[in-house]
Length: 417
Image (cartoon, rainbow, N blue to C red):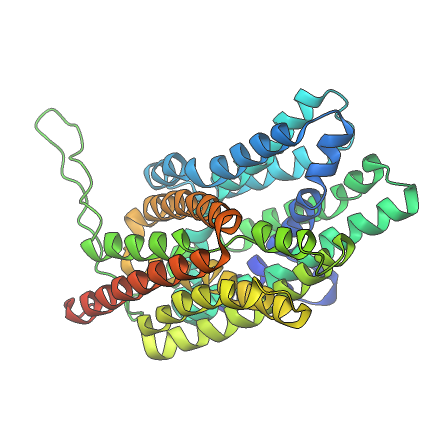
């Protein structure tokens, strides 16, 4: 069977053990595709006659679908145990819809494709995270998810830059710019099928010698042959969800940050993507660092997230260019922790039989809190920047208290083999 580290790196970025004929990876290539498309979703819809309201509603529905629908796909994945099937289906939906956006003339068709692409992420994510968690049990969950996230960002940077280059060469023709994304999409699907054949059962990595949560008892059948309801998720998991939701409730989105950059005349609009690319670099570095620390000092690493989140508005919402850029880098570092270490902790709190369900619930709560946090910080920005800074600081202080609760519960939990 493929080595665990090879599985993690192939799933997240360039395989460290494969030769250069396999120069790419599933998540890198998939990020190339959908991040490239998301970088021009607004202008594309506008070119088809959409208003700002339509763009906001469509992209909002898409993000809600990407996170909220995991409440459905997560439990279904656990119930069917067909992790590869759900993963392949989700990636296929994303990879097919993106190039079609380039030839979607009616506005309503383009809107449907934008939402469908996000649904593809909802379909695959619980299954993909569960598969990755099995391999990361050997490599160290913090490091495994961190490497996955850090290398993911390569695709997240290359995709938008490629689309921008094609637009420049074709005079802002969206067809070729989105059509070119079919190439990495096909490569991603081919590599995914190859990986499925090479590693049919990644759960084998999670051996009894690896410290994981105690397995949940199998549901017993009732007298009429029906299965009993699955055991509840552990209380520590719910406390952890409360912590992550709270810290995201006080987290400013990059949309608000970029709005500040342009509306205050701090940076020209053309420079904002460069700042975003730099933030993605900070994302990668923070993911690796927090993952390394998590494997060594445990859940105490979580305290870094509310601290970073509280610092973002203090630094970013100023009128000095270097401080605004520094604030964006802090924002990227916080996102790196969110996308790597937060997911790794879920795998350590919930045993495999209900892990996909847990990932679905975790993502849905995170998504709802992110949406609320974006609205809160945006409204406070329009009202008073000092009020925004104070509110975020109070929310993150509460999050620190919840993090302490999670750490204490993990320490008091019985030892697991």
